[in-house]
Length: 112
Length: 113
Image (cartoon, rainbow over all chains, first blue to last red; front, top):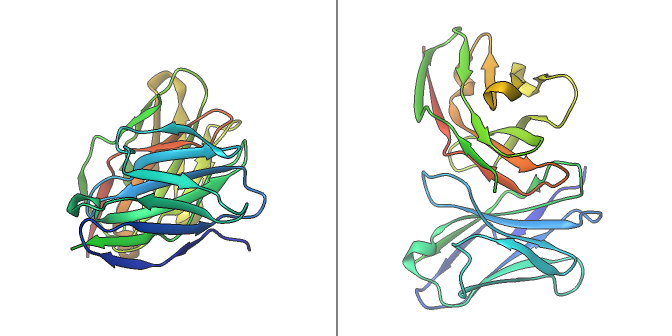
């Protein structure tokens, strides 16, 4: 059964460094999302992406964040200059119209 | 935008007892509704979903949920809880014809022996 794949499973980075979180969605998906979950808290929407552009973003998704789908398969989330408070689990999801979104297993980002 | 409220932060039930987790949503049109379960350090597992049709939906692990439009609710139920059901449960809502989800704050379920 196809699944959404996220790499790496765990990333440790120093404060101020750039990180790129990667996701390989299921091949027929058209809508793509990033969510984050700070330890012990709710799952928060970051951004949705459709037709090679951002369709919606939350107030969390500030200028430090960017997304792209560089080669038609990978879907990436870049954090330009990480802060301690960026430490969280980041979930990628994808879907088509009229279906639920399928989630990856997440990347745990630890900023030290 | 759509939003979800889960009024109970933490619920404790005895093994074998029945369970109901509450979820209220806010959305002006027909919503898509979901329940996810998350064990510590794990990802999100879909328990069940409502898109349309029968308002009582069956999911995995013996869970069911009922969509009540008049109450804007989508409560999760299980007739007899097992110790392995201890986890965090998240309700989510998406806009009709779109899978852009918003999650509730979650309800942590503890199961007493």
